[in-house]
Image (cartoon, rainbow, N blue to C red; front, side):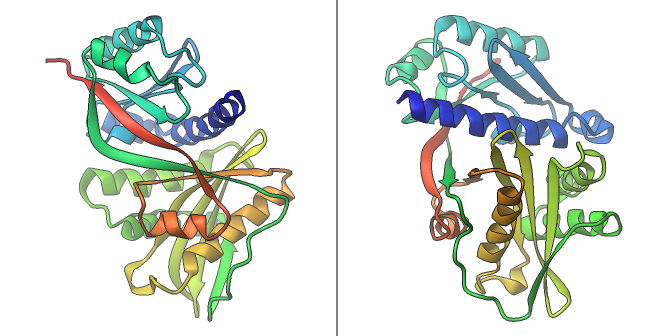
Length: 275
């Protein structure tokens, strides 16, 4: 269990780095969506006062990088009380101690319906994927950064504030992120933009984010090709561990499993309302 917990901690560090780059590092997003990122006693505490999305407002590391204890809960409750917001904790099911859920329930937390799967791949080589006719995958250059953001929004089929955030944040990390940490890719079919993918490189780990395929191009195996490209980049940079998150057992989850990823844990969300 210690090995799995240590691995989960490394993956969570990569994800926290990605969210920090996309959320609070961009002054526009920070002001518009009320984003905050804080670190307390091993936890990473994400906050958003204007986007009601569990992924953007949660404590990461409970029972992984921080003990699953009453003291940890007190830290979470105090932080979100200062924000005047609900307290939410992500639980890495199968990683955290079994009695963690009972502890949360005793302190007034209730499980939400949304569940994610965190996948991991450890290998010295890239996955085998079938060629996609007409597909070229290019590294995003400065001239294509705004296009990358627009494609990600369309691919995720987001609109309103969530669409603005997706478009703005994915472009921002490529424009202003730590050099070499974030690398974006655009997949084109016969020259027409069709897909996006981002890799976030932290010590030892490559995190795969912004996986989108535009509706007109789905079902051709493009996402698997984009996964392979980013793994190849990470391998060239010395990474051997790769991670991705999906919302349940969807098409993306199957594509990751078919390219050598395995589920490490299910991420559930537990919330205690301010009222």
